[in-house]
Image 1 (tube, helix red, strand yellow):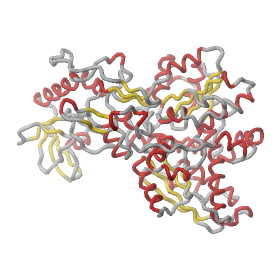
Image 2 (tube, rainbow, N blue to C red; image 1 turned 90 degrees about the vertical axis):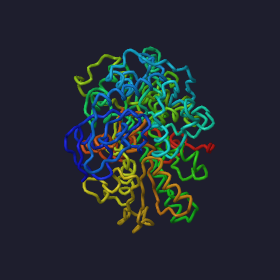
Image 3 (cartoon, rainbow, N blue to C red; image 1 turned 180 degrees about the horizontal axis):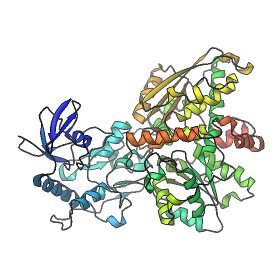
Image 4 (spheres, rainbow, N blue to C red; image 1 turned 135 degrees about the horizontal axis):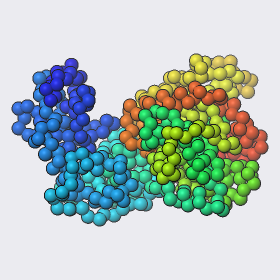
Length: 590
């Protein structure tokens, strides 16, 4: 351990720690703007300045490592004045229309300006009106609010390996740009929203569709259905005064019903449906490869993460045949809401407005893909993030903490624990294995209490091997086979597996990819801040919800069985193929 003093308090930390980390380890708050736990050191903003004994100048605490005997002061007059000046300099170039800003009340620059009492501005206002990029259905980019901390650039490059954003020009002309300063819609942006989650100001925010949804609810001619994704229920509470990882499923359903939605339904239902379709597709591909000796695209990749799908469409477009043809649970729900649900409720599909509450900004882009109109209409009309739902709850005036719990409505509302765990990295794989293994062997997966621990966890790439023994007659060709699976979250980790596939060295049969760190529970539409500690708490809540479900396997969902009997006929059948499956688009790499 390295021993030092911070404000005359003895501190011992691991070698290689920064002064900022040392201060945080003993509960001292040093303000930052460019620093983020998920990202590399930058030292760009200089807000975290401290005094170090025997150093002539103030030091950026996020960038300077500790050493034995170091003495640090974090709150001297010199330090406070320097920080105040840095904040003023940032404000002088920042368009200060805070009351109109979407991030008002949740802006790190605004918080620091309040904390350091920046009231009488002593510097000239150098802010200028710059172009607002609203080309993307997922993300808005407003350069006039950018403080050039470069969190978004590091996120896009380090975490996601997309590099849709970069630093352009120098000095006073430096700005955060896309390739050739093109609109976000026209570059390799995957819409994952991780840049939004890390932006300290309102320079990057999600596209907001709250008013459109309120208008639909208030229209007496419209029947407005809402679906909620599994990761929303374990994060929504953070925006409403609850601790991270608090499950608020029942209160969320009650609140949505009070807002005026005609039916409150569960994306977990179509997550169960996805498992039936995707599991059948995987087993069909294995049969073609092993029995019919056909040239089949293996490994098969999951396709429920739209950020991941757009990444492979851009970067590995020649390998999109390895993606499952299944639509995501959101889009399966959308098409069924305007076909099966409409028939069951005797409604005209044109009068149905389908709204989804997602942890993901990329879902907004996915809903507008031209492939997603198999109902004859746009299958999902509006996508709101977890943050947008929290804002609607506040606008509705409900005291969320005091709301009673209630259950989802029926018809697309019954789900299982397998559908719930879709929200965590490894969850789709675990849900698929619970069902596929039982279909093939007639027995439950050989893991205690159905918990397939090898596919869980926050490692960037995980792998597991499931030995198949005791097959039922139809699947005898798999007897003794070892099913090799892999799981990756975050697009940099996904890229590792894609490079294996491109090189012809991939040993796997089935691979789950989620675009966001931690899976959907770390999505670009989740409450801010989202860091590793928060993601772990949400993960624990996801698995707790699974453990408490009465049914934990997708194929045992009675409403799934009913929809096949009444409407879809069979997994991978003609009607399910038309409504629940899709194709992909080759996109430019620019």
